[in-house]
Image (cartoon, rainbow, N blue to C red):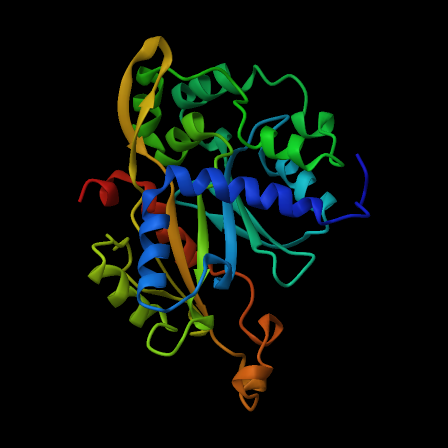
Length: 303
């Protein structure tokens, strides 16, 4: 596997492929973008800064973050802070992009060994099919191949019975056993939008006028203790999933997030045209993320 790639523009193929499929799968994306264009908030979707994208993984040999990160590290991403979510039995890391216009990446991993023996048995009955780290076999010079890999099944289609058993203990586990590496969410940077829409509070008002349902776990607005990172999210849309033997059942798909990163205090004297990403609060906040994970949980989707 190459340590770096000369032409990181191949990254565009991967990111565009992720977003193309994600938009088809999450109708709220088109609804929000169309409403933003109608209200003259943006002219085209390209006017939006994608703050970050997120993926979920299983913490088992050959998979998990240690495998998944190889892809984006090869394209110039840098591994940053670690976060631990005790109640949800998750670890997570974020990765800063090679170019300012690229999204940050947030990758979480289920601590499978912390689950009950029954849940571990179910998960490993699927993940044990992966005998070697699949990232090691990827041609990272081929952006199309990487894009295809991120949307290809890693193990057989789960049974509905296994899905429902996992759902009782870990909704995260149930989501990953079916959705695998599907893009979990993308994030609109609201601070770059026109006045009246450039705070999470204002943008939430706009969203609810469009009939968008927001995640209420911990409140519709999640704010970091330093006040620099403010977030909200939609509730995941329900999709009809086909399980093994053709059984069908509605499950949580993906959702959309919104982030407001405030200018750091020591850059407060800068004028708006001078402000770039490096002048704003970076990274993530575990308490915010903990509640945003619940956008796919039945406590939110069942409202």
